[in-house]
Image (cartoon, rainbow, N blue to C red):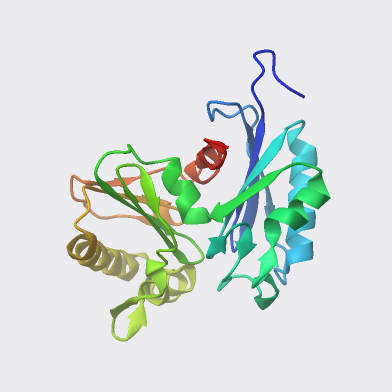
Length: 236
């Protein structure tokens, strides 16, 4: 269905390690319905998650196109990595498979990239970190995405990566206090590495942040991971 002003509705989907979320957006990226969510199927294989997306799509109503945030490297709609899902995702043409399932055109991008599109101002160097099952990252320069950053898998401290020290498993293991201490060190490390103008912290575990943040570091709502989906259709 096309809205009265001729604009298209976009079904924005966020695939996470613990949940799959969806929301229909108008042409400007404003929500038209409340977010729908289901737990990520276990094991998190492609067919099961695609079926979960189809279920959410049915709950959300009519739309003309689909944006998907995926937790891994994505190139031309093909998922290249899937550390927190299942090896069956590697090399999968998710854009085509989901388009065939829903009968709509589909754009797929890294989930932190989508979160970033929903958060950034478009000025200067902006870094986006998502704290969830894993540790997502996206870098923007004057509003332009630097693709395939994947900072979460780079060494951080004690021979561990950022994800190993700050992912959900680490949070459960060491508790909020120590996790926040690690996060403070990570923020300092990332600032020296990227010299960003602003750092945005999002994702499902961002609500556990309990430390005084520098003026150029902001916590953003997890719903940005859906709201940013509209950006995947700009200039299309």
